Image (cartoon, rainbow, N blue to C red; front, top):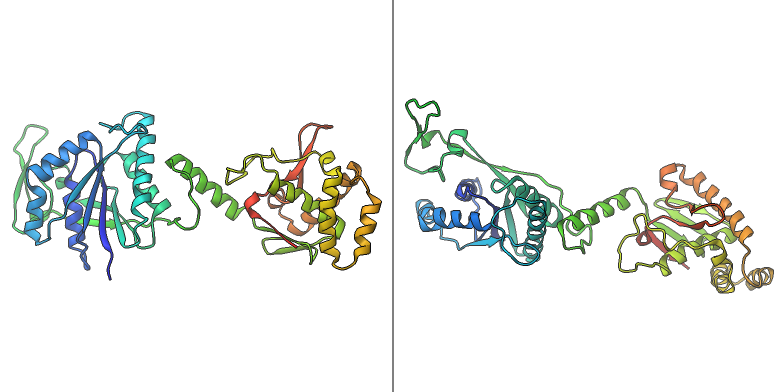
Length: 380
């Protein structure tokens, strides 16, 4: 069973790109004839499209000439955040609204797995084309397509040219210098469809955000953390910390202290609704916060996992620090932990995400691990 072919255009006051693209798709080696057509435009663009394509019968004439079953065309008006249709795209806010609108439109259309989108960036203002292409990169599936239609220059700007007809037609062009008008024959017209490659990110990231700008930020964070920050796994039983494919063996004492910082990051996030940490360090504790009896008991459970059935080790650990690890011990082990991590990772930029960082002024420093919370996994 084939896809339902869905054409999506962004247009301004040049609706010719609709029929020109339809012509080019119809004349491919494997023709694409649409089942649905959507034109995303402003109220001004809608007036022009309705007049020239529908009221003056050009779209109907195109279908008749090439034997294509008529397709219902839907004009989709761009609206702002308050649901008011835009008459033009002039201000910075107008551009923001267009981006958000196109993202929402494509997000809804790409939910239909039986539809294949054919998106054209040939019309509309340049920002509309940019938003459509980028939105398709964020939302597009492997079978979706992106196009630009290329017209012979003399015909591209001619108001009477909508497609290359089967029978020759002659057009006259105005001479800017007031001379004899130049006559053009449609035999000399060429309409070429350029399929544009684009990176498809749908399914790679969650894309929970709704606005175009927020989606771009979210995607960039995902890319940054995917390529810069590697997954971090702590295996208490094996006494290892693994960063990407690099496994670091740690002595139990260092392992449980390192794990205490990771547990704070996972369980004491002040903004759990946020999917990413980025530069946030609000969860970083003071060393004195890790010196409590409660934290000691959590460490003891990790210590037990590291030593297995050797209960004596755990009892000895609890007897040595009955009220919790002192700050100086934590500080000393932090230095040892960081040294071990740096020795194994070697890459200074990479290691900054996994070592225990200190932030703040002297005497008032908080400590924590900067790796994204979504990259952390703790195994008993």
